[in-house]
Amino acid sequence: MAEPAIVFREVHKWFGALHVLRDVSLSVASGEVIVVCGPSGSGKSTLIRCVNALEKVQQGEIVVLGEPITRPGVDLSRLRTRVGMVFQSFNLFPHMTALRNVMLAPMKVRGLRAAEAEEIARALLARVRIPEKAEHYPASLSGGQQQRVAIARALAMQPRIMLFDEPTSALDPEMINEVLEVMTDLARDGMTMMVVTHEMGFARRVAHRVAFMDEGRVVEEAPPQEFFAAARSERAREFLSKILSH
Amino acid sequence: MDVSVIVDNFPFLIVQGLLGLGGFVGGTLRLAIPAIVLGFALGVVLGVARLARARWVRGPATAYIELFRGVPLVMVIFWMWFVLPQLLQRPIPEYSVALAAFVIFEAAYFAEIVRAGIQSVPRGQVEAATAVGLTRAQSLRLVVLPQAIRSMIPSLVTQMIVLFKDTSLASIIGYVDLTKAAQIVNNREIRPFELYLFIAVVYWLCTYAMSLVARRFERTPA
Image 1 (cartoon, rainbow over the protein chains, first blue to last red):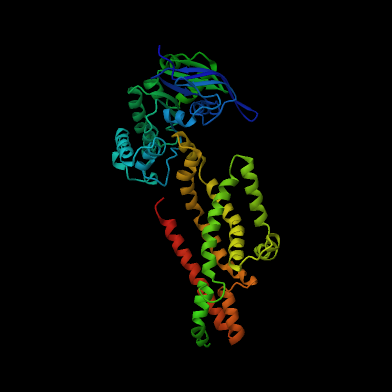
Image 2 (image 1 turned 135 degrees about the vertical axis):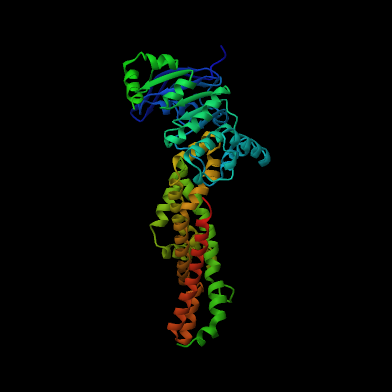
């Protein structure tokens, strides 16, 4: 098997006195789609935010694409061009059009000329199925459209890994599918993805593996069929009964 | 009401008092415009510095802001006029004193407006900029400041208007601005009603023009 894309080794993190990640060890293979789920406050968002170093860990090691990122002197900018991230609240830049949002990083980080960046950006907006919204400002787009622009923006740096932090939690129900479809396309194209979500249908259909977190620990990890049919831990069964019954 | 006093002294009031192109050192606009530009520029630097992570940057910026917000403008002008020449052992011209005092003093206020504006930009914006690989300086310049400035505009314009009107304080060191020019004319003509009404209208027209320009900026697309 090829070298894993992401490895967490005995990772601990504290926010002040709060111990938010407790001895997390987890490995994500290249091309794998892993869904991280668990009750709120279980540390799942914090966990994926460590992968692109938006959060620092105090103990343990994280290796991304063969590079240990928890040591001092790591080139964080390079790391972040190889790891794209999509946020719950989209976080599009409101003073730029959809197109400009996607063009910004290729121009400012990779130093591409505007024409090249625009070509990439238009292709990506087509890939997330909203080429006609290129000149729109975020305020005039629906939540689902904004999130798809955000996905295009993250893809613009041609990352090898994509992180999704509850990408559909802020969306109206009728817009969730358009975002999940784009994510499913990405998964089919072989992107390595780490997805924090409560969309268990997506997990069942697309994920290769589900990791269940509780109180800062990865309590269990299993292929989705196995996890949904027969979760091993009491906490996971309890969690599933709550979110699947509504 | 006798408007002839205005008509006769119009060149002195406007050319000398408002524009500063007469025989005396003075001019309201000649002081206000560079003071606004330079004071705002210094204010941006101080406002950003006040939010810096490094304590050796944040500390001095905070101290500067607290110091100059805590003392009266007139006192800063007096310091520049009486104390600084003694320390430097040479005289400083009125215009330099007035401009320096306004820039130094007003920068503290602009800095607080800039800080509040930057803090009003949601954290997620910086995170998104960071996540696509922008450096801290790039995310400040390309993502945070353009949004912050927009939310700052109303407070900035208010502060610029305050600064514009406060330039009349420069007359205490003999700087002939619009107010001082009216005072000089009045000493000779004794027409306070006409003269002070006239300069009130001039001040108001200038500040109202500033408000109108600001409103256009606020309306440009988000």
